[in-house]
Image 1 (cartoon, one colour):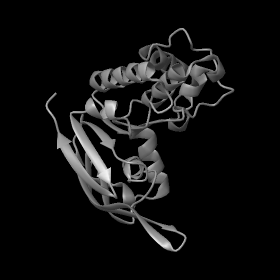
Image 2: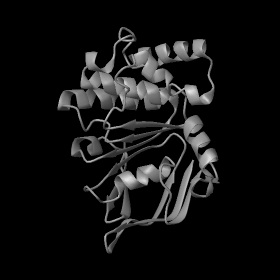
Image 3: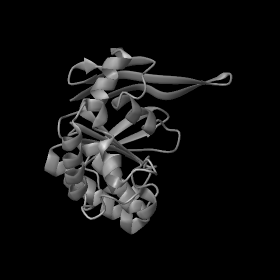
Image 4: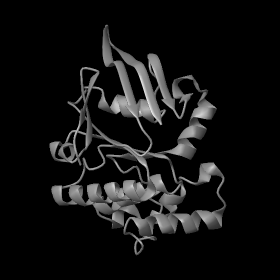
Length: 226
């Protein structure tokens, strides 16, 4: 699925060079679930952006199913993201004037999905995350946990191979955090997704059977029994 080799990312900050990633080698197999943990500024979100084709490395390769995302033109990279990768973020990124169903449908518009099919698939995706009764509610009429469920439905409605989540429970209290994690892990199993999540939360990290820890741009992998 993913094969990262020598991935380096450098930024300029004033006169200084920041090494967000420093020669990362990483393999993520199809259907894997990987949690990435580390301190703020340690490189974990940068790594997730590389996996999602949202940023390009300064050096090294990021291969998804044998295709190096770092070498794709922008149009082809956008097509890969649209077809194969779903994203969930800490901020729900919902459009406030659209209903839950309309927000989910937005993921299908770039794929050229016809309006009737968009509506049906969006409704089914919302039912799959427990929001079948909330199709016509706008974000301001929903709790934070419900809004994150809409965001998850939006990520999954296009039936991606990969789900990338960046601090998906960061804006939620502990009980809602656990509900969302149970949902994400259940969907990972149900859909056979490759699931990669960034977190700073030690409670979530303890649930991981495969944990990547990043500090100062360097990665360490810990394997645990289920």
